[in-house]
Image 1 (cartoon, helix red, strand yellow):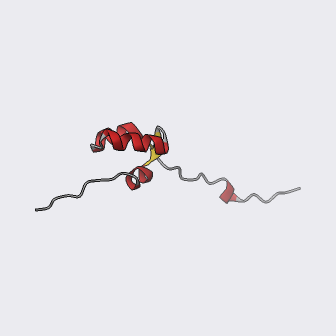
Image 2 (cartoon, rainbow, N blue to C red):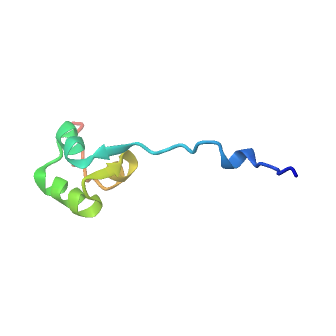
Length: 63
């Protein structure tokens, strides 16, 4: 007896990189209040996209 094997089931899926929230805040100069907010929202780890979309940055003064 033979079985058909679907190769798509065995191809490894791409995993998303997970970053430490505290380390990300330290590297990017995010203040402690914003760091606490991110920790409450995500816990200790989050993806880069989640961190970027939930971080408020002050507007740049170009003048």
